[in-house]
Amino acid sequence: MKSMTMLGILLAVLGVLALVYQGFNYTHQKKGSRSRSYATPPRMDTEHVSLPPIIGLIALAGGIVLLVMVRNKRRSKCGGSRLTLSFIEEGARMKPFAAKIGTKSPIPN
Image (tube, rainbow, N blue to C red):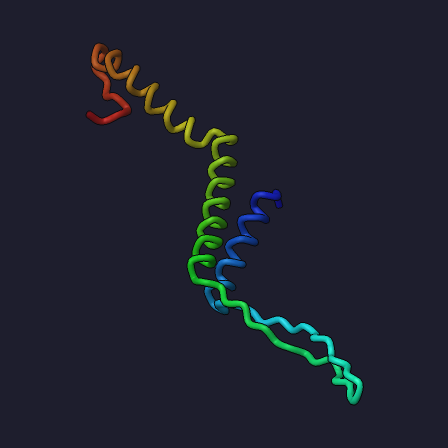
């Protein structure tokens, strides 16, 4: 897979996860204190970080936009849209000649 496709998938997945979980927890260790009479051991504290839903929406939309851009870029390299356009242009050029010889044009009026 190309790097842009991978980035688009990663952004979309992270956006969905941010929308579903709306935050994450992490644990860190606080140092204990020492005084002359006693010492307290270090303790573990858990913190919660909230993620606003707009962050998830932006990541999801960014991932989708990247995937669509990669898809359209691949199509234009293959010439898919150019073939259709050239066929229509060719038919439009052939219309006057088809009318002169009495045959039907490939493009309807």
